[in-house]
Length: 437
Image (cartoon, rainbow, N blue to C red; front, side, top):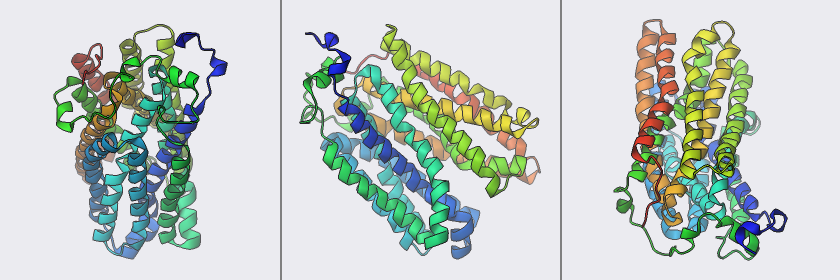
């Protein structure tokens, strides 16, 4: 019986168990990074006397460390393997998250934030490498979309739990409890994870199915290590990096400025924000999963891989364009603006699920984490540039009493960034050829 003739019912679904571990790790990743923003106004600013510049410096410490950590984490995970690399990343970021509880100065929080950033950077290189190891190409975008939806689950869970913990036990315990969750995850990671080639619970049928459309990697010696610098000479590396550079800043901008936008434009209080933010991130969660499914569906129709990925990406880029009208429609009813922003975040998460899988489409598995790390670093640099620019732009127009104009310019960037990135990607790698290492 050939691989294609293996009945679906004979294949076990162990790869989905592995994916559930990655989903929960990603949820924990976003839960840990959001705690400080939820405690800022009511606890940390009054206690430590922060101004907005102090808090901005702490945020930048995280972003810069995250950018640097992306390259190092990707390289390390490719060198020591997914199992140990993911575990090491999660141990360090859990301890860093807990360490916030013992900070007693702005500098102390900056140090804790830096350690959190450099270690949390390991999540996505490890997650994408796990998906590349455990899923055939036709399922990778869907798998990436599912685990990436954990970012939105974390964003929803955080405001529901962190303030309650701080109110009942103290702000320190909000950092300690959320940080400790990652250490519990490690138990299950070591219980269930191993590469498919070494896993005792994986059936031969499922192993063959996982590699049914990626047979070239079976003949590659995975123990051969790829030098990080070697990857920089390939246009495939830079094509992924450009996708991240232009579009990661959109997500970061919406993540950090959405509450402020709703407050400044529509006068929403802290209590008013809960439902709109939950709606936005719930839409993003469904977008992540649906976006991952779409390119796989195109491939099932018989489309070439490059056509399926690029068509899906183009559709998601178009879905970001309504951001141009968000403020005008918001004047009629603010829910129009919220739903348009929700559509944009949904499109971004669908976009992310697909651009991550382009790495495993174009590179052998032994280089996936490194390339994701390089692209993640470039994306984080773009995030720092846009965050600083947004601050200056919004301050400028706020001083003139025209804050809505500042947001309008930012929304123009958010709406057009995906089409620009898609055009450059299409120019560099029209048919997404696979790199021969």
